[in-house]
Length: 192
Length: 68
Image 1 (spheres, each protein chain N blue to C red):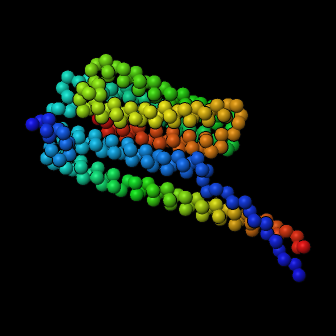
Image 2: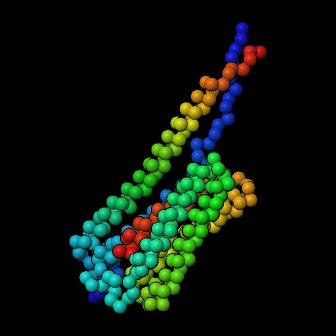
Image 3: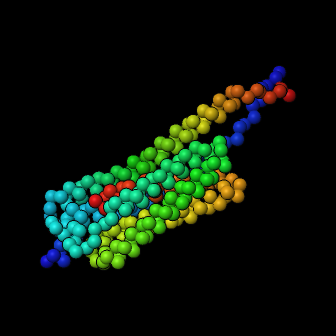
């Protein structure tokens, strides 16, 4: 009597642990930002006519920030392309990740320059409610952008050295997409 | 007086716009986490299903080992 034997196949995880962990973190962070945007929206709608923004305070730089926004969104799109290429052409993928990192770093630097200008013009954390919300929301996003850039930078280093980035690459991508997708919402809500 | 009502931007102003914003943001803050958790759970379920199907297909294409 013969019995057909089938060897058990190794179980693959559904998603890498780094991706699942980052996703859970991102869900919590989305609620953190939504809470702040909610407070901002309600506060703004309750401001008496003619007091938002406070007369005499500088206007937020919508046009300059639009350039930053385009750079950040482009960075996210380039990272998406690098993800597609990662499986096929690792050599090309690592340079695309580097370009995405540089665009993200440019966004942070330009935002810093805007902040310096606004503070110089008199918009500070305590000068008005708009100032308080602006620095809180945009500042928190900036901190997340810097943290995501550090993670993405570690991925770039690994890829340039020819070492596999594995779960770190995908986890860093999820975190960067969160930073990229959160920004247009903040821009549309706070700057207009 | 102004300092008193600015202390609570939600309940103090009493304007229709504030109330609308309050209701809309409450709905968003209430349902967004449920939608996100549901979305992640659905995505995981679908990915697990696809993985199982791929394993099953691989198992079916593999030749059975020789009988002892």
